[in-house]
Structure formats: C-alpha cells, structure tokens
Image (cartoon, rainbow, N blue to C red):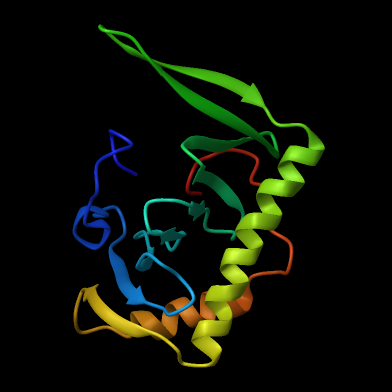
Length: 161
C-alpha cells in the first residue's frame, strides 16, 4: 500500500514484511498479484495495489485496503479508516462498518480470492518473480488458498497472531 495513493510501487520488492512472496501474472487480473507469508505464517494477497487483504495466522481477515480505504479488524468487526490530509498532518477518520457494508466488502474479497484459486487450479498463471527464489512459494500459496473457508472470518484484532 503506497504512502501516497498515486504512487506505483514494486510490491514484490517493497513487501519486506512478507518473508516469502511471489508475484504472478494472471490473465483474469489486470494488475500483477502478489501473495506471500510473514515469518509467523500469516498470509497477504495484493491484487495490484488495490484490493489488498491481510490475514492473521488463524486465516482470519485482519486488515484490507479497498477503494482507497484501509480496513482493520476490531472485536470481530471491520472499521474503515479514511485519510484526511492537511498541510501539516494526515488524520485517520474511523468509522465502523454496518453488517451490510461488511458483507459487501467480504463478498468482494472472497470473489477475488476465488478467482485466484481458479487460476491456481487451472495453472493459468506465470511467475514474474519471487523471494526467496529457491522455495516453492506457489505451492504454499495454493495450499493456503485451498484451506480458506468459503466465507472470510473477521479477526478479533488487526494483529498477525
């Protein structure tokens, strides 16, 4: 997620919190997809710069970035954080999502993950790069996708564990 919304970034290079990561070109997605894992095993998937979904070690959604908004899990609910910029500071304006908004957001993320899972099952993807280069990160991402339940659960908090 870029500090300035207009910035383009090399997610594979910049996502250093993901100790294992792979960048994929998939026909069903306009932007490259980067999937990977933190040292603790928590997964993240970047569908270009937006949407992004980050999970905890239990496979629950802990954070997301969609449509220019940051979402984080709090007590099993999602909270939207909108940046408001002034000449001297950036403030995050917090708003808890209602049930309908939460369902819509989760449905959108589930759709992206489902399309990604299909690309893996049909082997319709090309590896652009990966870090580290000597591991089967594709296999690990594929296993993780297969282990996801059909409905994304929201974590109790935005932490990795």
